[in-house]
Image 1 (tube, rainbow, N blue to C red):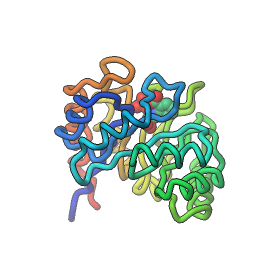
Image 2 (cartoon, helix red, strand yellow):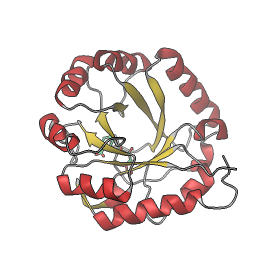
Image 3 (cartoon, helix red, strand yellow):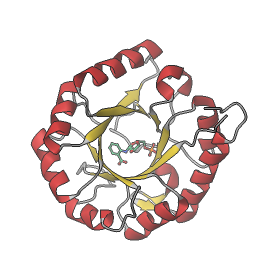
Image 4 (cartoon, rainbow, N blue to C red):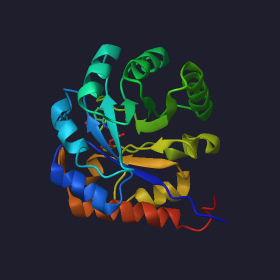
Length: 226
Ligand SMILES: O=C(O)c1ccccc1N[C@@H]1O[C@H](COP(=O)(O)O)[C@@H](O)[C@H]1O
């Protein structure tokens, strides 16, 4: 029996020291927010400088909200992210088009409402999978007025088991709830932004290390056999 290792993405980085802290703590991926209205927005040229500091096998993820295919492709030409994350109101077709224009695989965010059902999530995943071979998986976040990075949790029990093991769980994860989230949902990966921040866009190295330890504690919770 092998234990699953939940992959960890730390999102919304804007500073070299935060990138270094995430890498040192063992993050698998770091996210750059290319949504100009976000307080965590980073200019593509600055993201490129931060990406250049990454060691091998740490994935840089570019987050977009309602950007056109041309905008996504232009940004990726400057900031060489390995994976895209579409977090707005893009249709499945628009995600596929933007990913093709940028020649990258992508995560699609689904913002879960109290009314969302498991079968809705299954249907949505099938639709995304059918629309592009570049689709890498769903990311579950909480539906709020803003597009994301809101630090709000949703009811994880809505996620069907058959989706969880290949999806990314996000939305209000923190040092306090990460162990329980991983133990309950058994996601492929987790994504956190506000839960490891000192201020918006400014990460706290100690919170990042504690968050990663909390995720590992969730992996080690009995019953988590691959
Ligand atoms: O981080 C942002 O500013 C952001 C802006 C617009 C869309 C998504 C954004 N972040 C993503 O939101 C989720 C949840 O974040 P949190 O941990 O609840 O703060 C996460 O996937 C971020 O990548």
